[in-house]
Length: 262
Image 1: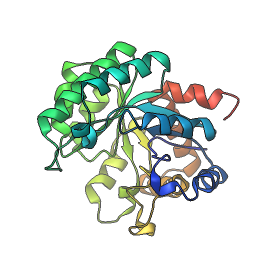
Image 2: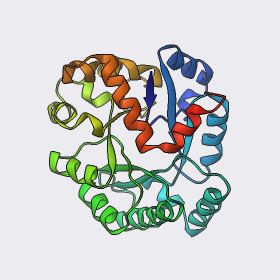
Image 3: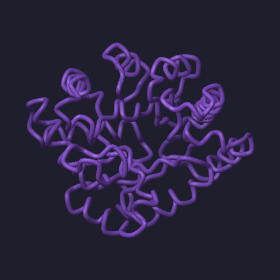
């Protein structure tokens, strides 16, 4: 069995065939997924998705690429939502140093505010940190949270070890299926297997066999097979380890998978 630790199943790209997409993943052994929000308004769609599809659990948060459209009222609304319904995590939150049209200081303001909410509500966080790994680590050292997942990890071995010390698992997905992704593939092999979780980030970050096509949670087992081959270990053994790692990082998802609808 597999868990997709990061899947935007609520995304508009899945509107035409969302039921079939999730059923296809279930048929291939993907029995759980974390569905992260990207804005306060998006939380309702994430909730609806998780109610409809067995094994899915929500994360609530304001993505760094969407902070220019957000304000203090959104942070207050997020806090109210957390009081009313406990998600599996706070996310997707973080920093993005790649974009030039989203002020970095504003991204940091929203990250800090949401880390404080995670600490207050004792929830793990799901982190976006494109070209901003050290800056995210700096804030995590200031504001300690109950661990979580460093999504789409693309840092160094030293940075990976810092996240592990802080109680985080590291997310790997479609990028490791490309032979040219030598640094990420090396990290996926060399890091302790207890530190890894698997993700698709569907509909984004497609694996090599999809070229630039739409990614989906049904690709997760095949991505897992690539990781098993890279680490030279039995697929079933890897799947069991990744299962345990994901539920350790996301206890709220473990509760969903034990429930009647899973």
